[in-house]
Image (tube, rainbow, N blue to C red):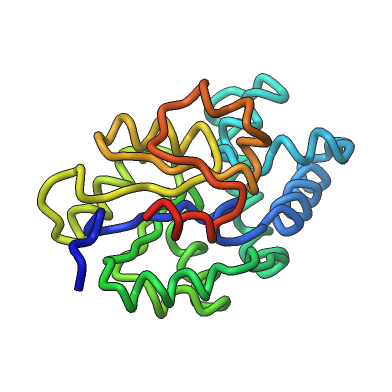
Length: 218
């Protein structure tokens, strides 16, 4: 077997492996209703997709830390029990993971989504079968993306940060990878990076318009 370009490949979840927009927006709308707030329009709901939920409530409404945590707790309960599986696999994901596994790569998922929710989603869509490790966010938004990436690398038992690459669709992924000291491959098919105009804004070793383009890079 030819020497692998990297030993391990980490994937973001939302906007990278799964399109989870409908479930997130549904739970955000229900959270507003529970808080006695007017349900926001589609444009505002869309802004809640991707970033940590506490950050979104602070950004949109100026919530205090405690208020944002309370809103996030409501969201997470609603999301878990009512909206979690309102998601779709991006085309080619399972095929790609099968190819990477056959070629000998270690595979992991590093996501801001709370870890137990991420595992349930990945189990549901059959992605967990291809993963060596899955780590996600905590309930109080204390873990940064770089923390989650480092947890995955440690669990994969890979020596040398240059031997692992993170694949993601947003600035959180790009910055998290850079902070953790690993290469980043960006996708414009998700939520954060919409087109090629982002290529010069964030440090990346490669870019793809869909996840299958990772194969050509590797």
